[in-house]
Amino acid sequence: MYVTYYTAIGNYQIEKHLHSNLTDYPYYNNSSGNYESTDAVLAPTKRLRIDLENNILYSNDYLFGNHLKAKIRPFQYFYLQTDFLALKEFDKVDDNYSNISLFNINLCYDRIRLEKFNLGWVLGMNYMGNDVKKAGFSYGLNTDIFIVNNVSLYSSMKWSLINSVAVNEFEILCKFHSKNYFFSAGYEHLKIGTPTYDFISLGGGIYF
Image (cartoon, rainbow, N blue to C red; front, side, top):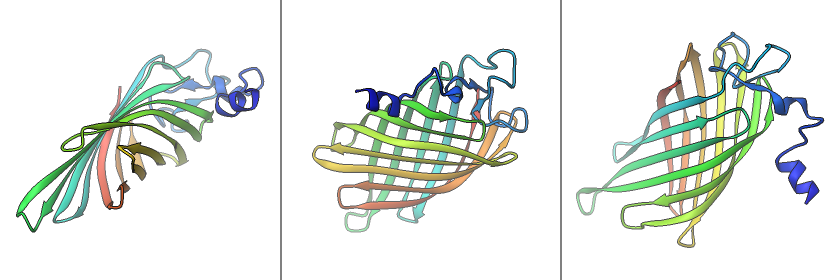
């Protein structure tokens, strides 16, 4: 129990980074990412932050979609994330489009909260709509790396099982930040049972 707790949650008595403050937005001071050392300021800089992001997904002329994300950060300790993934695929045989929709809601905890790097886990559930209409338990990891001024890398992996079928998601994005908004470009991969889908992702977001 102790090993599991301290591995997943950490020890707040000896791990100073766990007390890092949540920033207004990445690079607000041209240096810090999502978190800022408690030594840098006299008081926490942000009590509540909402991150909104939307990305257009393109695979080919017959397969494309949209990925909408929202992160609600009530403070620096954990946050809630919701995702809505909507895909359209053209069926040449039936000469029409089929729709795939996937909704995620997760509790997220950043186990490491450094100024240039954060790494955490996510737990929650997802729901596949359309003809499936089934839900499943999901878990995964995500990270942000703030490599140079105004540029960061984001990566996320989630695994799930819906109706005894594996539903796995992976994405990696490069983000360019400007004040409280950003532009992003990257790659997304989705596996639903046997079929796999690969996309180029382009979009952006804003911090409130």
